[in-house]
Every structure is written in structure tokens, then in C-alpha cells.
Length: 389
Ligand SMILES: [Zn+2]
Ligand SMILES: [Zn+2]
Image 1 (cartoon, rainbow, N blue to C red):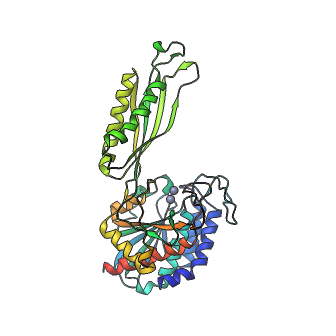
Image 2 (image 1 turned 120 degrees about the vertical axis):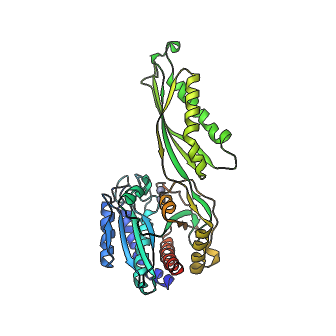
Image 3 (image 1 turned 90 degrees about the horizontal axis):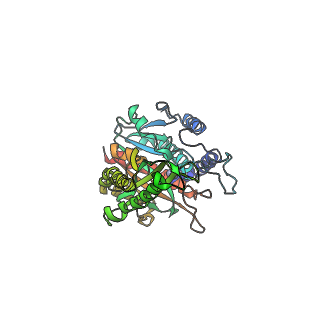
């Protein structure tokens, strides 16, 4: 039944996806996107609320019989990227593009809304449809929590359409699926002088350069080779001009992990190496910011098994695709930590051509992924609510 309905609403989903693809909006500015979604929900007579001072929408589909409540999420933001694809649905907005597939997520969740409305008689509980703002920028979890929008929800289910997975396949593997992220800023202070008299100054450029190199030993020498860690300095600014010894340097870095114990140690490891390296050059290093990004997305064995069973029921065992975890972050991890839930990658890769990676200016998804994602959303909700009666 779910599959037939996903097929029935497929042209609708393609239309929605292409409309959104042509009219992308960046994180936290999804005003027209949210308006469009509200219009679609109105047409279906699904009640919804806009949460706090965001564009977040939470819609509610009540089943025929009462039961538990499950949240299904679609993120809806685009990226500040100029689209280089030439296609009929190319982005009409300069320098903004749905280069991560979130247009497909919204289309699939609206497709699932249609399916669930048609099958309301079989729904043994409540489904919350959550259209989330700003996922590419750490998402809206804390605003949702503050507003009490997550109260009374028992479980959550999230999908990312993923082009490294062939269309028709679904990865619902157990364990870490996406990395936890942290970010930091270090300020290195030296002393300015004439470029020709370095002995009279303290060179912040030299100290910062040594810190960049030494920080790499966190991954190679401190974290176990069996664990996953990553330290990237993405930005380094220093100095005023070529003939002045730089008095100050600022390093901005990004960290990744799967094991929360590594996250717990990052701040201390970075400060220790930075401070001591700076001291070796008579400079000073100060951690001016250490920000927690998002935790790792981790499927528990029970939830992964449940997601796999739903996938196999819809598409057969052959649809299950095993994939190692990927290193981007995903704020759905917050929801999974709070509510418990499952995260799957739905194949969006074209089998017969190159698939430019997520966030690339030539990124595109195979649109058959929309019906797979919509069917999974709907079936997962139906089965979870039935199983938890
Ligand atoms: Zn992304
Ligand atoms: Zn994404």
C-alpha cells in the first residue's frame, strides 16, 4: 500500500522538489520555503505550528487510534553556492543552491504526508512532521527544545538522500553514521618589530605555523589509530604587511569524532599543544573559542535493525546497502540523543554517470530517491507506532 501510494505521489514530489530547487534559501532564511510548505499542509488539512522565532514547522497527523508519537524530519535549507548545472530546474537564485539534497527531503516528507493522510485509518498513534530550519548551520535543536516543541515525542526518524549510495539502495547500518563536530579559535600573540629585526620582536606567524603542524600530532600520536579523529585548520590570519613582524595570528579549526571521549579531550589537547608550542617561540596562545558543533549520529543495534526491517519489507533485502560512516556532521544527532531514533541514507546516486559530491556546485540527486524516502518515512512511522502499542 505504501509503495503504491509513493508511486502515485511521485510526480507531485518531483514537482515540489524542482520548485524548491529553483527557489533555494540559505540557513535560517527559509521564509518562502516555509510558506510553500504551509500551503501544502493547508491543502491537506494538516494542522501545524511555526516554532519560536524560526521558520521551523511542526505539523501533526493524528492516527485513528491513540498511541505513541513519532517525529519525522526534513531539513529545508540550501547553501551559498552558485549552481553550475544546466537543467530545467536550475536554481534561479544567484549564489544559492540546494547542493545537499534538502529540497528532496522536503518533497519526500510532503509525499509521506500524503501517504499517511490516505492511510490514517491504519495509523496507531501520532506523527509529527518536522520541517527544520538551518541544518547546514547547526540546525534548530536548541530553539526547538526551548520552545518545548519536543515534549511528548517518543521517537524520531531522519533521512539524508546521499549520492554516494546508488539510487534504490538504503543504508541503515548500526553504529556511527555521521561524525560529531567541534570548532575552535586560537589567538597567538607575539610582539611587532621591523621585519629586518626579528630578534626585537616575537613572530606570531612562525609560532602559529608551528602550532598548525604540531596540532596534526593529535590525530597521529594521541588518538588511538583504531579511533577516528580529525583536526583541520581552515583559516589562518596574521600580520599587517610584508615588512612587519606579525604581532598576532588567529587560527580557526574544525574537529571531528565518533567517540564522545575524544570530543571530551579535544579542548585540553589543543590548548596544551598550542600553549606550549607558542611558549617555545616566546609567544602566547589563548583558546578564545571552543564551540561544540553537533554530536555524532549513532544508530543503536535495535534501531538499526528496526530500520533495516522496514527497508527490507518495502524493497527487499537486496535494497540494504552497507556503507562506512561519513565525516560531515548532522544536527539530527541532537534529536536522536534526546528522543532515540534511527537515521538512514537513501541512495540518490546516478548509476550511469559521475556523482559530484554533496555541497559541490554540480551536485544533483536521482529523483527516484524521493519515492524511496517518502515510502520509508511513512512505513517507518506506521510500523513504529504499531510495534509500540
Ligand atoms: Zn549539507
Ligand atoms: Zn545535508
